[in-house]
Amino acid sequence: MMDYDYDIVIIGSGLGGLTVASLLSRKGFKIVVVESRSRIGGRFSTFEYEGFKLPTGAILIPDGWVVKLLEDMGIRTDNLRPITRVYYRIDGERYEIPAEIGVPKALDIIDKLERKDAEKKNRPMKPVELSKIMRGYYKKMRGVNQEEIITVRDWLLQYTENEKVHDAFDTLCTGLMMAHSWELPVSKFFLFQEMTKFYISPDGNLSIAEELARLVEKTGAVWTNTPARKINIKEGKATSVIVEKAGKKIKIKCKMVISDTGAKSTVSLAGKENFDNEYLEKMRIKLRPSPCLLILVASDKPLCLEGIHDGLEIIMGSRRIKTVIPISNICPELVPPGQHLIYTSAKSEITLHPMDIKYEMQQVKSDIREFFPDFEKHGRILKMRVCGIINEWPESRTWLGYGMPLETPIPNLFNVGDSCIAPGLIGTPGSVESGYRVADIVEKVL
Ligand SMILES: Cc1cc2nc3c(=O)[nH]c(=O)nc-3n(C[C@H](O)[C@H](O)[C@H](O)COP(=O)(O)OP(=O)(O)OC[C@H]3O[C@@H](n4cnc5c(N)ncnc54)[C@H](O)[C@@H]3O)c2cc1C
Image 1 (cartoon, rainbow, N blue to C red):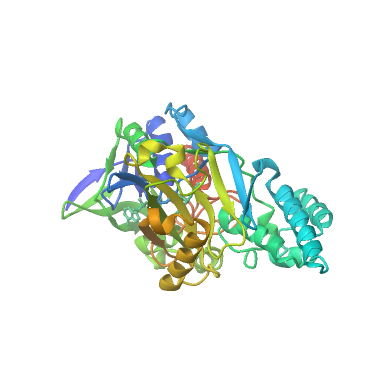
Image 2: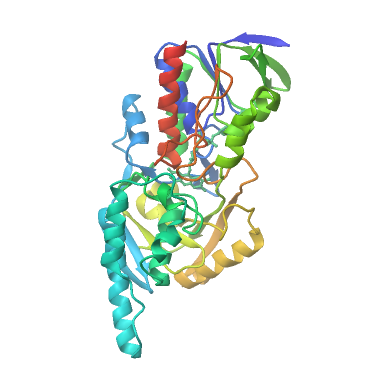
């Protein structure tokens, strides 16, 4: 077996792996990143299909951690396209609502619509209880008791039974926190660090991943098509990683291993017998991967928000699709001439179970037909990706507030990425932030 020697082996070139790799490379550590796929970036990447540049996962880059990383690394950010306008479709009508006041304003609109409807139909109104909800909301924003385990839905039921209001909160939960309002504890909901501005990369996320990889390659290496097969543990420490490269087994000796493959996969690479029961139990209880279907709809005429170049749409009262991003309005360079592209995703009613794909797909198609009447004549589903909880690519490796620690019981083995998100963070900001934290620890330890 051929041997290599590096300071640090990073398994996985997702955004978490590339963050910590680029930060530590800059500090002078000799690093190798091994990636099992032919393309880097993981769920933050791009692939070409029928002339479209399609995302493998994430599309929206929230302002904050990712932008900070790019700036720290000297990677340009001025080309990122901002999404500043958020439209809500409520009862079939479209309303533009500034992101900073999304919840109260949406509830206010629901309140008005309910009053109108009650008057029209001469029936009692289903109370929205806007002021009571908002009082309860701001009280919780000032501080939450982490022991509180009632769900968001149960918390809301103190104030209202109005199903439209419940739908609005559920939309928020599934879109930003990875679980339904009837699943997520209210204590986690109020940890959420608000996101009010998003960007899309006009060259695709792969171009960002490649820039980060180039920084690593200045002093180290990034190997694609190189799955890690085993993390060797000797006398309680990680000593090397066995990878497969061009059909050959290679041993990479190292001082430290950082895994971006998810906490569960790290355990199987290093061997369950090397982890104490407390850690394994914590992992079983905490990690809650969140599934979704990623749906990319192509069309020969715009199906959504025609003429709006910096907006996305949130649909209330749908079966499945909640957030709709008209990628081609914002970044026309990602699609072939004359084509348009919508990005949307769908979550099944229970995130803890594997999805019934056929049923979920029917629900999605019914939504698309209902909300985009031109779809039948002008559109087609270009690609659909199943991001399940069993395969390695869920929408998130855990719900908001359910991150594992970065440290493992093995002192020189760390996790990075979205199984280790800090409380309040999720998605790409969560992965990047975990990379900063690991880099800090490693710098102190090595
Ligand atoms: C459909 C979908 C939509 C999303 N939308 C958004 C969004 O709009 N905004 C947002 O902020 N976030 C979004 N996310 C979440 C975001 O994409 C992820 O949180 C983030 O990209 C995860 O990065 P990571 O580094 O933690 O993991 P990953 O991207 O999963 O990277 C892990 C890498 O490890 C590699 N790997 C695994 N096992 C091995 C092995 N044995 N050897 C070598 N390599 C291995 C994998 O191939 C992969 O490249 C979305 C995710 C999905 C799936």
